[in-house]
Image (cartoon, rainbow, N blue to C red):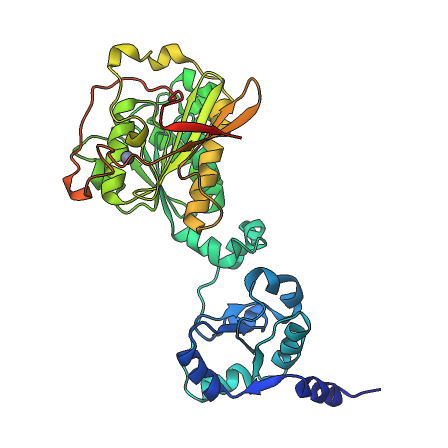
Length: 397
Ligand SMILES: [Zn+2]
């Protein structure tokens, strides 16, 4: 039988080691080097090497491939004293990583040599429990959850689309939710606007939304705007938000928001619904088409039916608003492929999703201009319906 000491000696013989001093030097010279901390969570929380990737030794085999895709990436592994990192480095070599070293003396030697270290910002135990299903996904993880908690999303409208979007974004732990809506809760809203309840009839929708959001997640800071967006207030309202979820049902707001978001540089997750059909897309300023690339000007008011005439299946905004919340979370986390330049259309009756490509118009009356030249227009208030196929679009499978 081999002793633990022999076992370590055998592992050490197969692994390259370098001192804390040489590691610090190397990180200065080769900033792309992956620094991998394999200690337990409670050790990591006491302090770590800035920029280190933290994967506890016990999770190494299951998580490293999703975090470090390049098998030839230079990796420096460290633990507390330089023992566990030897075993971790050996494991990485066995997994096919070709350029792995273990830092001799571990984090203790790093600190003793006076090198820079930080204390990580971490979720509280209550937050770890609440967001555990996010933390378990490598693409989100604790870091992503902290990012969501630092994020600010503005919801235009606390109605059919704003309701599911607000609830899911609150549940996801988006730290600040702005809600702008000038209306009060009406009985006819309750068929689809799930933020609101019978006992809040007659209250401003923003107040009702706050009660629902806080009831679901008290961590969320709710910023209320009981007003309509106008050319006067639009920049003051939207500036500072990371993403805007547009659930508006009228053309003037849609155009105003488009133009202002280009000036402020904020992506807009756009949704619209009508009867059994809905659509979702992401307008990312100057990185894809804007609303006016498709529809340069609103149609004359007399050609647009009123919202009251339109009608909508109560479940439909649940689907579309939830898709908008999904896109907002992806944008906040910087993961996946957002619906930039793509419009997703949903038909509840046939239960079909169709994707349309949208192209940026180089002569767009707004996004082709320098943002400083964009002027805001207050169009006459009237209802907006989802856009029908336009010349700038082509269907894809
Ligand atoms: Zn445009």
